Length: 192
Image (cartoon, rainbow, N blue to C red; front, side, top):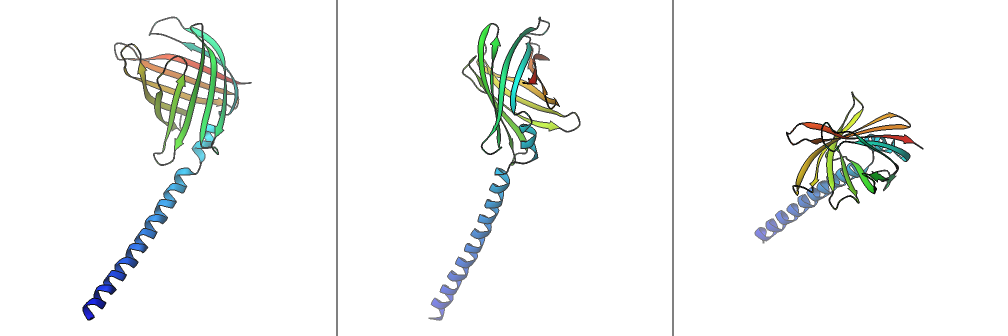
């Protein structure tokens, strides 16, 4: 009988400690998810791009080539409670109508910006991650997109600077055949 009572007491204590440990795990999980889901300063930084924009862009197909220019529009809005910046783009590229969409986020857990881009000029998805440089005021993304010629991933870099409340400046860089970096695109956004 003493043996059975002792066994039941051990079982009961183990159960109590397990419940307490599970409760602590649950509290830690709840805290982590709360921090992960709560928009903060970096989301406010993204929100500065909300609005309607006139877009002037130049792009270069290869290093040393003449710039091609086009105009378009962009409409940006914060979605899902201020967690993501969704921007719809319309314009022309090489005489063809272009529509695109970017979705930007700040991942609180990874402490980095994340961006995806899709458009009607392809069927792939460009994915990049980035950091904001406080000193220069520039958000720098690096990522990969599909090169339709090689059918392989191709590196790219994008930068975005908030010049003032009514002006944004964007640049995109690709790798030349020799491996050097060249500016492929620059866009000035002016608020409507």
